[in-house]
Length: 157
Image (cartoon, rainbow, N blue to C red; front, side, top):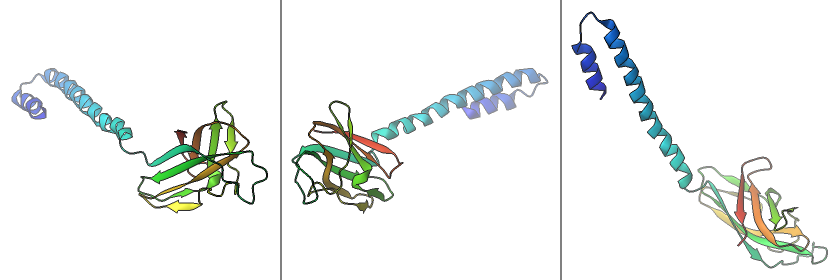
């Protein structure tokens, strides 16, 4: 298409310069639609694997010797690193939201199966419990990459 426009411009070597100028805007207009398809691949990127995947399911609370009482709720969480960089996982990076919308911070050391504090290399995953104080029905778990990083939420199944 560009060759056709250039050929028309070169073929019209007449003294009428105003006829050449209107030909330029269609070339600019034709380049604008070519940029729109470039935007489509970026919108297709979310269909790729997410960089960090969190899966959560209900699990029984396994009382540790640190836990005071038995009024705790645990969720089994698996974090998978699909990114090209290592990520850090720490129980402090999680919160559980219950069916009433209340957010519960992780209670450190309460559950014997607490998720480990680890650095996950690309392709690695880790599974462990996140525990909140009190008896409640967990709805979702939120993992934040670092204390102020990007958050990933998973519904509890």
